[in-house]
Length: 242
Image (cartoon, rainbow, N blue to C red):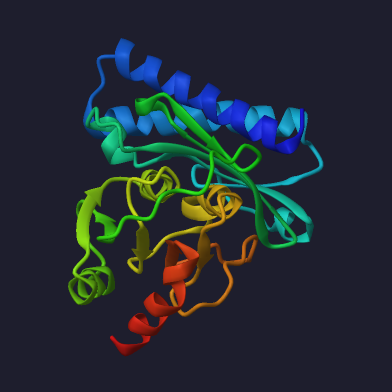
């Protein structure tokens, strides 16, 4: 399998496991989320260690080490992006399997198991349609103040949604137009989504316009902008005025 085929297969496999766990266990809420994180992480890590033993690995659910820092190729995974949504029985959660090559999000698959979808960097589904009245995604629980302020300036509709992966893929799928986040993320929250979004010819950057870089010693990557290229300059300028 190519790297992209492997990413898609693993994201789907983990998603299937998570759906089965949610259906067949008596767990709910945080206990279900914790069990899902553990089970999906074990599946993904074991497969990558077996099939790509020479690559580096960074997972939200595994203890990080410095071994990955010397690698050009590093898998960056989030076994359950949106653990709260998963535990609540919602559909706006995701599985992220991405790979950074020399610090750039290059390969990615984002499974949306609750919707029966997996979006991939090697199989773009076509450029998403931009709405005349812009639609901006925000967190269900912690809407970023910058996003709310910019939505007001642009008269954009706000769409509340769960996980970072679900929000990013809503732009890819044409269900929204802007995902601007400033409330704090880590590399595993956006590596796979950015690889998929860039493959669909969307703009992806930090909210100051700088490039998103991965496999750094500190994986904290606090902000993100995914949008149509025609809107990027205006959005970045607006952020600077806030």
